[in-house]
Length: 319
Image (tube, rainbow, N blue to C red; front, side):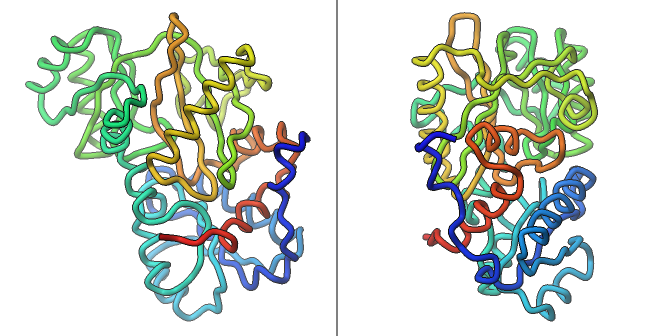
């Protein structure tokens, strides 16, 4: 660990967090990942001596959360219903402090289109894109944007519903498939080059991770199942480029209003230009997840990372 990351360690005694509800599961397409993340977080908190218990967020959630004694919540719900501002708004109304970003930042980050619009307005580089809602939109996008392209639901994570396409016919098929997950579908320029993911923790940028996979792209299987995905820390950039990437990450997260923790996905093209794809406000915390890897490179083990995220819910005020 370097001195730069020393302040990330929680100095709050486990008993002082009070009774902590770990919110996981839910009903989104990322439920299975959230269950794994939630159980890992819950186990780490309990092992550290925190009075924590889990809630699989389902139809009885309102009853449970209003009848349980809860001093704060650790949100480890992925996707809609937990990462999009709705859970944050409910907890705000109930006066329950929670981990991660607030309502606005959560809603913005979950919406890939709005995120790109904010970044574009500030001169932060993000690939060219179009919104698809019909076959006609697909034909128009095929003419406007050069192949290959990547199709993605605008409000999903974990690469769910994503596909790389090389022709207009493939684009139409991919749009139809992505539409099963979301009424709003994006198509985006494909950036050829290395991929990086950069985590933030309590307003500090953690060491970047370079990703490598034999898959067409870093898809759901590469993220959570495959054993042939490559993770490089250090990421292989020279010091000047790595600092440029970290500074860009900080600027992009500040633009959205990310608080507590998060993770940004970035591509680098063959000219060395970085292109920002999206930001996650409640990233995965499974045995394949990236934030724990970045935290380890900064000197924090999994338990220390979880405590640091929870400590931010005590230290940060929300505007």
